[in-house]
Structure formats: C-alpha cells, structure tokens
Length: 353
Image (cartoon, rainbow, N blue to C red):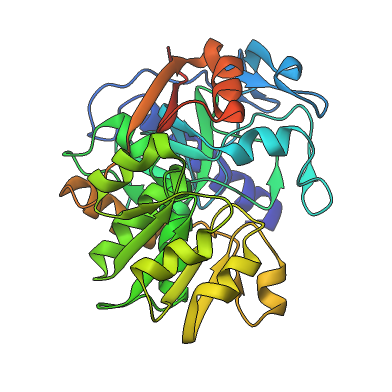
C-alpha cells in the first residue's frame, strides 16, 4: 500500500475511534458528544473568556463560539469543572511574560484545571474518557487556557482526581500546590528544621505551610494582622511584616532559621539577617536570591507530583480555603478580587456554568 494512502487509513481509523470514544461507544457509558470533526476542525464552538490584546480585566471577552481545541497525540481534551484563579493569570494577561513566552491571540487565560476527560488523542496510556483529572496546564506557549469549557492537556501533566476530593479543592490545588511542593523539596526541607515563609497566608503560602509541616518542619510565617488567626489554624507561628521583622523572627528562633522561602519579593536583607549558619534560601519572586547562593524557582507542570498532592488533599493533609466561586462570566470580577488582595483564600471559576 502506498505510504500516503496507508497514513490516511491510519488517521481515518484514529478519527473513528476518537469519535466513538467521545460518543460513549468505548464501554464508558453515554457522554455528551463534541461536534464531529471535519477536515477544517469542529463545527460550532465553545464558551470561553479570551483576550486579543494585553491589558487589565477590561480586555476580557466572553465568547460562545471559540473553536474547540484539537486533541493531538499525547493529549486529553478535558471538560473543565473547576479552574483556580492565580495572580499569574492576570499578570500574564497584562503582558508580564511576553518577553519569555510566545503568545497566540486570542488567548484564553488560566493554568489550573480540574475536570473530566472528554476526548483522548492517540497514545495516552493510563487514562480513558470519563476519568476525573486535575492538572497544572501551562504549556510552552500561551493560547489555550483553562477558563473555557474545554482545554487540551498533555498526558504528562495529568493526575487522577481522588473521589474524596471535591471539584473546588481539585481546581485550586495544582499551580499553588506544585509551587510550594517543588520549592520546599528542592530546598531540602526536613524534619526538625525551622522554616520561615514570607507571605505565608497567600495561595502558595498556605500550601507551603501545610507541606512544610507534613515534612516535619516548624513554620514561622509572615502575614498581616488580619491573617494571623488563619496561620495559627494551619499550625504556623505568625509574625508581622515591616520594620523589625528580623528581630521578631530571632525572638522565635534565636539561632536563626534553617530555610527561608520568599513568596513575595523584597525580603533579601531580612533573609540574610535571620538565616542560620548553613541555612538555605529560595524565592519564586526575586531572582537576586540565585546570585546570593540561593534558589530562584520556576514551577514546572508534573502529573506524578500533582498525583501526590491530590492524595495528600484527599486525606486531609492539604486543604485550600475557598474564598469565592464564580461562573465563567464572573472572571473579570474574580481577577479584580485577586488583584486587590482583599480576599482571603482561593478563588475558583466554574467554566461550564
């Protein structure tokens, strides 16, 4: 058989299987089918929040005819049940990552996703249509985000959602949880250490407090007065920001702290003042830490690590405080809530509402 004809036959068979999976003919029960694909893509479209230029919340546009993303080999198309809002979402929308990431307009923002696999590309072992999953879905370019009804997610980013984990918790976990987990483990946090976490009451910070304690560390967390009770409830010792911070930390840890994790920036001088001899420090917000012998970390998507975090959340070791939920139309309001910082806890979007 000529090569081009053979390839066409293989692709036709893959397409037939894909349509059968979507239509619920794979033994997984009936499912709401996607529009059948033609040579030019799917007919119809999906609801999404998108933007066609950089800016603030005013550039967001709610559409109901965005083309449904294709599902290439190694990808799953996920129907989004919950998607957490993170500050990076509106920072990216403002052009904050334009110097280092290619952007393809119009862009759907959002990197957190929890949902149900609606379609599989070829070669996605370990998953099937109908599986409940979660992921940190950042890819190498900015185009398909999670504040939409459907999003394509690479296999290696996917984790199975435990039945005990509700949708909002699952949608709030991936980016913030992975950021906390990866930085703390790269810093070698271990049992018996004292860890100082700057901005410990934020989305990443609250997960970092819980993970550090799970690893056996004692935690000191910086926060404003209004968040002290929240930190105490998580098991951390709270201290106020501002002048005299180093002295306040030294009162709690006279010999200094073993690990400093900076989640806010602008605290390098304090870090020098409180770090014990042989201590380590890292930041997700200040690249100068690397020049000082520390770690400047950038979170990476990881299905296996997300699986581990989901397991901890399912057993109650990790918990996100859900401060607000919004339907897809409420994304501009959610971004403003996140930007002002006046809301305590995670914000979650329900794109299929």
